Image 1 (spheres, rainbow, N blue to C red):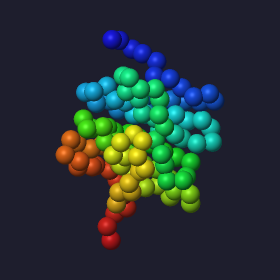
Image 2 (cartoon, helix red, strand yellow):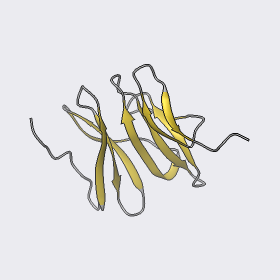
Image 3 (tube, helix red, strand yellow):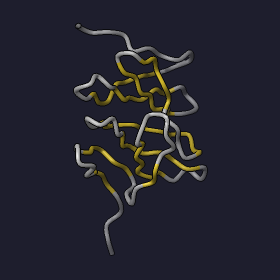
Length: 117
């Protein structure tokens, strides 16, 4: 269908789509100056923002064929955590990493974290 505008919220400084799956579900980030938000959209859905852990950053960076999303979110103290959203409307589940970059269709996640002692 060619390129299409996904949408943007008022006051956005920067927006970027980060990942798409075969169903056309897309995740990305939207920076508004005071916070970094993550959005989800699909062919029949407008922009929806992913829930975070209470801090100012939420990054959805990968989505698999089942629509599961991974990325990172900061908590209210500013500490980043890898998170997984089982659906775009769900609360994020904290993973034992600092950030997640990708996941496959069986739920295996790749990311980064501190080195083991």
